[in-house]
Length: 318
Image (cartoon, helix red, strand yellow):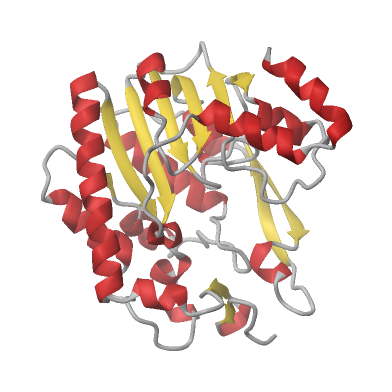
């Protein structure tokens, strides 16, 4: 295997996303650009915290550390920021404002890797053990019980060509542990973008995720609180992702794939808890929080389908 197309090949076939134009390297190190961006993030999180406090909503932010931070030794070459990655630097900035809370995932993931891999070798995402580790950390931060049956799931070995392996020529697949657990939560709502994607009516499915919103309810949940969760691919509900795990703890979980917070939605739902998650590599872009998630999703859904199907989409929205 050779590095290329934004992917670096490390020891024993470990793949890392480093960017096509050194953008990850530029941001990951302690540069003037990264300091400016992280400063904007710190101010944004402080504003969010104050607004959520006024609404009486408990809140946490968390950054999913890049594989570079948890497995620097597998890259096999120097890389800026290994000893002080952007998520850690942001955590220090946020700690200066006592109103905001950051949940550290780097420490528990780094500890868990001693037992078994917490990241996939050929992808940017976690293994099931990584998801379980993050789930426990978030529950602890929110004084919520973990659902023990989430940790007592079934597993089997499967092979798949993940995102980073797909970018190489020839593509590289990986044997991984496919994990699932008993579900007590049920999905009770999904917006237009989710429905278009699931019914197979979209012309192009790839990348059709930002703007997705689902609601899961669980009458048997050990914690009666309602949660609104904003995040990215780490929260997505199919499989052993954070949304599915958190829905086994909390009575109601609203999962929204967006780095922007929809304040009108938050104020309408009035959750007990708001969780914001973002992958470290996406910190390079600071959101504006100017979004209406379902209007955004409806517009994307209409653009994604063939013209002959748009009438059906309009019917869903009525």
